[in-house]
Amino acid sequence: MSTYIMLGKIPGSPEERKNLLLQREKEKEQQDLMGISQAQKRMIDFLIGKKGYSFEDMDINREFCIEVSDTRFAVKADIILKVDGRNLFLIKCVMSSPESWERHSIAFGRVADSFQIPFALVTDSEHAKILDVVAGKPVSEGLDSFPDKEKARELVRSTVFSPFPEEKREKERRILYAFDAITCSATLADPSAEKR
Image (cartoon, rainbow, N blue to C red; front, side, top):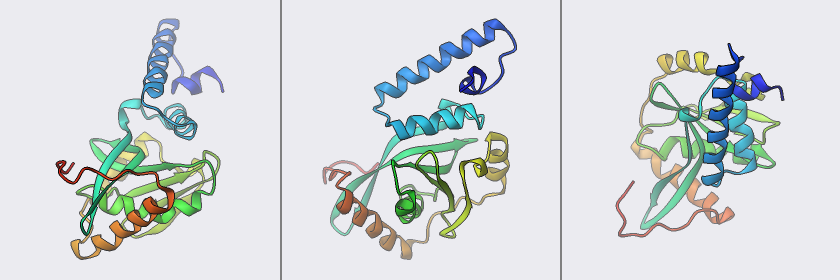
């Protein structure tokens, strides 16, 4: 990977190059402290180096508390991409079989937060599918089809951010709960803890 792709832009001077390298080094140290997986690191590098996003545009490993009947459990977002202050993309980074995580990502985007996260990307860093969470349908395939930051800003302006209908939320929560039971990746939240 050339240096300018790694930095996210072509530096205008040696001083700017030095500052960008220092910034990337700080971001990598922060990633290490956050316990980021290799798949997440590859995606973060792609978003910064090829699509013009910054580390500040991302919420990484953010947990959400979900309630199903009398049970509370935590689900974790690998990456939430924020554009102009809105959660625009939920990104699921997996080692293999990204298609098996598509329904999980749609359910997550629909009910994890108070408003739907309108789009999801499921990727193993090689294969990728972008999903319209609201419609529950694929939009495009391949990492090249992922919008850069400027196109994402246009997308934010043309997207209606709405909550998922209350009468349908339980089904989506149960889908997340089923994935949690299968993967054993989430831990039960303390019932007395406040909702997040």
